[in-house]
Amino acid sequence: MQQPTIKIAVIGAGNMGAAIIKGLASSNQNFSFDIRVSDINQLALDALQLAVPNITTATSNEAIIKDADLIILAVKPWLVEEVAKTISHKINYQKQIIVSIAAGIDLKTLASFFGDSAVLFRIIPNTAIEIKQSVSIISSHQANESQQQLVNKIFSLLGKVFLVPESQLNALMSLSSCGIAYALQYIRAAMKGGVEMGVAPRLAKEVVIQTLQGAITLLETKDSHPEVEIDKVTTPGGITIKGLNEMEANGFTNAVIKGLKASYIK
Image 1 (cartoon, rainbow, N blue to C red):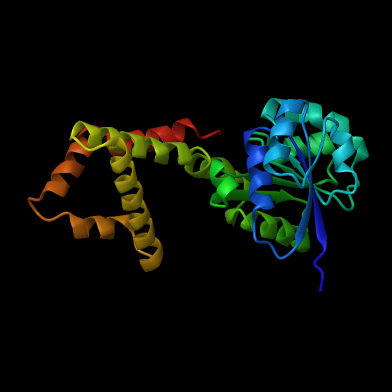
Image 2: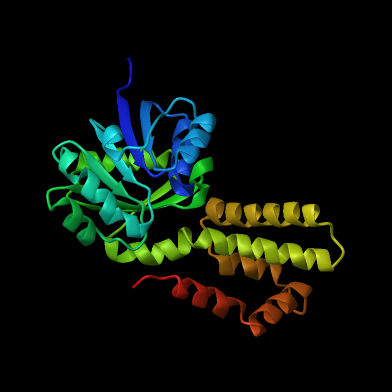
């Protein structure tokens, strides 16, 4: 039996919009997508279509939203209101779902742009969405169960999804959307340490990545706590506890917490 086609309009062909499109286009879904994308930058559209040929591109937002099931606003936060003005009068609010991935634009503000009857989702993904390994934090307004299931199903193709109250969304954005940069910063720092000890950069990177993958798999497979697994490595008087204590003396945990809180939009 042929699965229904889900029509998705993505406004914005920048880094995140393009990553979402590439992720969906390469997913092994049980249904088909009709993906359209708009952007004022024709070069960005041409580059995206070269990477994903089976999409429709346009420089007009109105042209791509007609009969779309999902309208994804993948533009910078300061452009959301301007975009809303160009499409709000063209949306069928009984049938179409609006998804915003713009950080800091809350559901109340989105409702003021589109009206209280609009079905709205705020989704905070991270850049790993292109390779279908994103964390997507989701909150909604006026969505019924079937609409929540549809959005959840689509973004589940691109990684793990977490449906949360909007009051928690910004804190989780620090952990996931900003957090991917913090994780990469640790990898870069560990690579530098390896190079200083005489290890080639590429080898250092591969060893650090595999070490982190092993740590993640331990926590996931065993449903364990980091402290439990750390205790197994820290032999009394051993080199690991000395290294951990040196990191703490230089503010490791405090730096991580302060970094997360600095990126938290209250």
